[in-house]
Amino acid sequence: MLLGAHLTLMMGPMLAVPVPLPLAEALVGVEVTHTDQGRSGFQLQFQVGRSGPLDLVDFPLLANPLLKPFTRVVVVVRFGLLPEVLIDGVITQISLTPSDEPGASTLTATGEDVSVMMDLIQLKMPYPAMNEGAIAAVVIARYAAYGLVPAVVPPFMIDVPVPTRRIPQQNGTDLEFLRTLAQRYSYVFYVEPTAVPMVNKAYWGPPVHAGIPQPALSVNMGPATNVASITFSYNALSPTMIVDLQQDPDTNVTTPVVAPPVSIQPPLALLPAAAANLGRVRTSLLSTTRESVKGVMSSEHLTRPEAEAAIGLSMLQAQVRSQATVQASLDHTVSATGELDALRYGSLLKARGIVGVRGAGFTHDGNWYVQSVTHTIRKGEYRQRFALSREGVGSLLPLVRP
Image 1 (tube, rainbow, N blue to C red):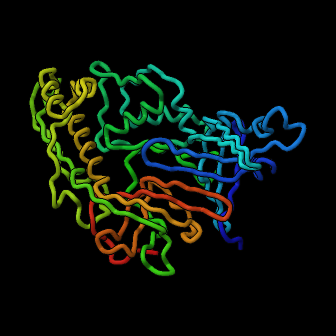
Image 2 (cartoon, one colour; image 1 turned 180 degrees about the horizontal axis):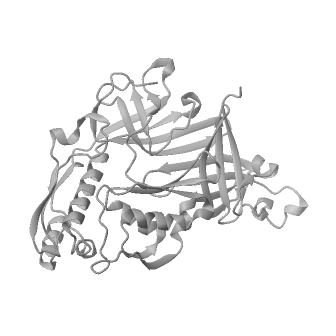
Image 3 (tube, helix red, strand yellow; image 1 turned 90 degrees about the vertical axis):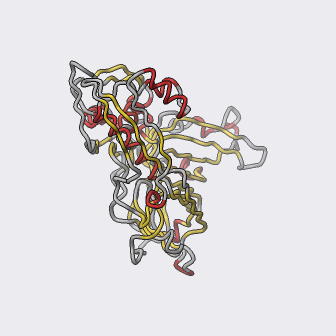
């Protein structure tokens, strides 16, 4: 059985294949960042030099057709015999750093995951009689050429617009539009690679706070320790509740809208932050008149476009958006950041999943949501920096699985 971590770099105009030997030998470092907010990104660092008469004109690596903008890049990492696709993206920037020292000049290719291709063209398009989930599926289907497979979770409150009253409109890029639709329900949109190279899951839905935990992060456990460093923090001002009065634009009936600081996600902590602290009470963006918009702007320090965008919400929309705001405030009340040695960990820590922490004490042990992971790979070294979060403190588990 092969031990350690092995990296395979694949590149191509649209179909990525293993790179030729000269390019593979010039590769000195890879950094990949996965996050639940925004696009994932990568950097490939190559060692470049000029050593012969043919190199008088320029660095030969700059002439390589694979190191051009919008080249597709797939990075595969194998622990033992199990390969994992670390990133599937495209190059968006090339930078050269010459040096007087022999062999110290570097060429860096920076890129983002394939969802960057959804952020290039601005569109104006109507979607009559379609709710947000149906719109997301239609938009994602346009990018089947990049291996995007839709994974759309319907909203927990479906509001199908009546065309005679309201028609959803897109005014921007597809990526901006999908994220705007997702934010209304405290949902997320991201693209992540699957086990099959060049096949990606395009996920539109709630953050995944459930599932089989990844191998645990072990702290202060002697030979079993795999975390080099970790820091925990608690933000008492994060939990928020919303109380407001909303006037329905169709019936003109004013009804209270209340969103308490209670998470609708599966719990990760024994003691949610809101149980000890109800959090800040704020006026939500549910106003239907410009007079009330002025009041919201003065109390919440909001810009006029942000406040006026809330005019004319129905009761269902008001309740959904209020709960989404509360949910977002609860998800990141308690956080942790740190670094681990991937070779001792023996696996890839994946963002947007669940991981256990053990050895840090009752307050911080238990399951956590993985917000982001940055992989740094060099010859003989593989480190992962991570950021975790959950809604409170205390472990729900009597024992954290290794």
